[in-house]
Length: 112
Length: 114
Image (cartoon, rainbow over all chains, first blue to last red):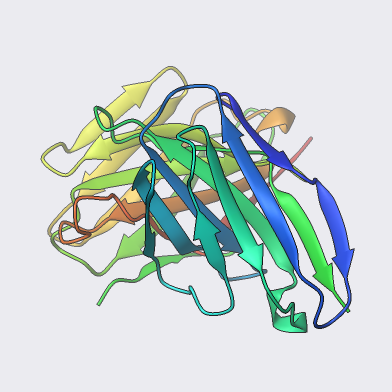
């Protein structure tokens, strides 16, 4: 998975609970992305970052927050989880010199 | 608008060629991608093509791009059981702010049978 790790791999939350998903890379790439994958819908971009200290909204940002305090790490937070956030979450990275995005192994989140 | 469509399912016999099709609506797309996802795994970048190209070949994979019809295809020669997976088509619209937002199709599930 091109030097991209995600923790945790699986998580079950109750409605209203909070959690943070971590994406870590060892490639020193500038761009990092968070996607969610739902059945029959492909992947949709939640938030992305073009460098340390910067973040921006993607297609479906509501209910999520992100931070990139260190270049290697991109955090995705759910402040108050809802069943609609049950999904598989993927992190991706890209260098500014290439158009190739490489994905992590994913985090499967279930909100009951 | 930005939209990518794929057929949901394809079944082929081992050793035959597979052709997975994709259509997109954004004529300004710059790059188009094919990703492979095996069960329980992340997405693996297979190949991509720049919009000024018609064809790209990489070992058993051939990508064809018809810009006029906004149609992208992935041909897998000599399909093997290890090719069974979901294949995603994705595009980068030109006006994605320079940050390369990928727009994905829903994926085509390829089943290879003996």
